Length: 99
Image (cartoon, rainbow, N blue to C red; front, top):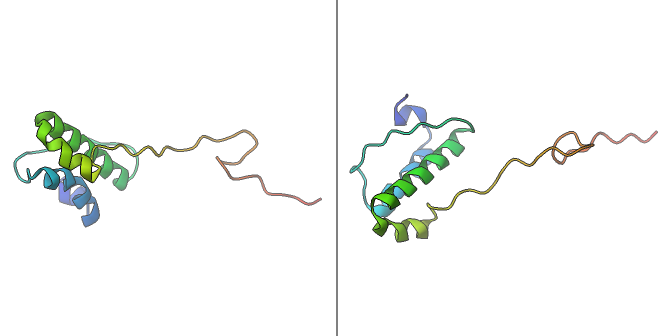
């Protein structure tokens, strides 16, 4: 339970999170409390942004077109690739030995 400015020291993360408010022109109209865990700060900022965008859209469907145009309602589909049998990691092979 830390402050927004303390938890996200990078300005890029803060801009990333406040994007839905800027797109819907609702800056300063809502008080937000978010609980996130897992991943890094960038992933958590993205998760908060997606949650805010979805909440704003539910609050007022008129906010959907500008947020959709900026891509705030799109979830990042990238996931961790699974480890394969016979490999060290997902793609890294064991060290090749000549003899």
